[in-house]
Image (tube, rainbow, N blue to C red; front, side, top):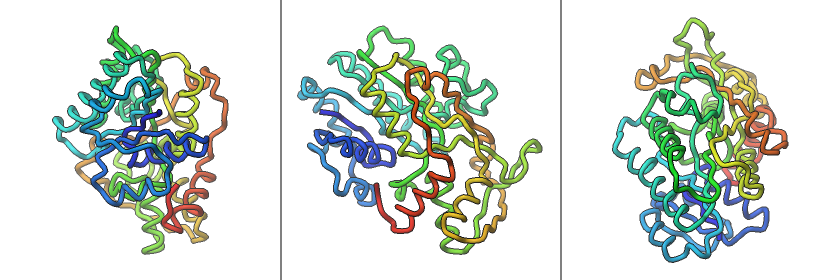
Length: 321
């Protein structure tokens, strides 16, 4: 069996779909399953069962011999929260427990790290293990992710295969439940449908014009492909960036979204909210040489192609993948 934690969430549920598409249905889905809007992400999926996250470690004690692989995608992802305790509980301590169980039972582990660990980018975006302890994340979510990366690199007892994937700005279907934390593409589509316009955050730095802030946007279907590649090919253990390697502006993103719905572009700018302004990343771009060195050679969706697929196949119909 293959386990996916965070299975009712955005990336987790898309990974379940991808596994089903490759004829894998012996899947154990782990989450808290308390939100009906997230359960829509699991409709029509082929699985072997659901396990509440609070019961997962005891389930694994009883079923470790049947477990071939664990995708640990579940996490608290609210970048605006300042509750250190909840991030330590769900992102650090829970992941340490899963790591230790995988080491004990000899189970390969792939877990979700984050590009947010790179902070303001002053040290660059290379997935170099030597940089991890020097990184300065800008919020508690990112800090908890980096704390686990640093902890993992210090361990002598390890799963037989392990990888921490530093996801950059992932967008795509099944993020309806994320509210404020949903991708800019999702919010852009909603605003265009409601008002015919899009409001972007104004730049509060002199070195970036309004709308010229840049991120490495990666389509969730590409992320799912990479996750399966790691499970199948088992490259060298360690941390890996998962991005396209090409930063694009928010202006590009909005223009592509307007084009996907055949509307004339209309953009205005508002101040970045105070609660995130000091921690706002103005530029991210994954160094993907390490990913490519594993033999992963597939091309990524361009921002335009990814947005076209996302909007035309999912957002316009309010459908899931």
